Length: 209
Image (tube, rainbow, N blue to C red; front, side, top):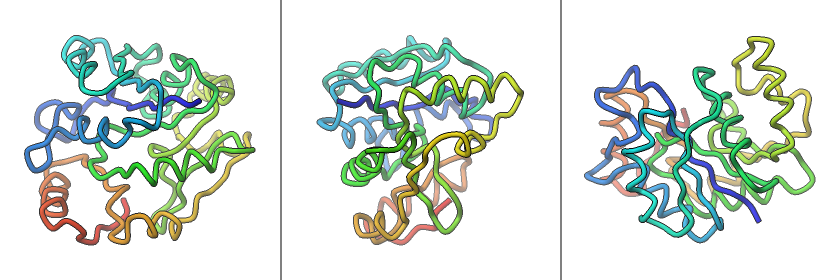
């Protein structure tokens, strides 16, 4: 049994409005993600800051097992978000995704999660680098991450050298999504326009970012 974790605690500094509620082609990205994750996990946690909890609570009825929780670690960037998700999760195996990825695929999530067998972390390795916000983590990574944060190091992948990591080849993910859209993220208005174009094109190619 594993838990799905959507990180919705970012500050949305480069996007107008609240990133946790953004839409691509008329659909809220976080709702698209819930649809993709539905059926893979008994529980899906939406981990967010205190200001968003009340607004996101409405999502608890969109799919079975969805629960909105306030992040116990705040102000520590994506790594703090991952730690927060692991701390509130009730399972050893967890899949973590950022709320700004509109094209995640159920099959790709299952592939990454399967890569966790015998490892502490399973993370996609793309031509542009690692994608730790579409990755699987064991709850046992939490103390290692906490120790890194105590040292003031916020880089997500720095703790990888202290755990057993399975690097999921990009080629395996491309078999699921030949267009390479699934790891596209939306950080600023130009990304939103690009994502809308990709959504409208269906299988258009995307740069892995």
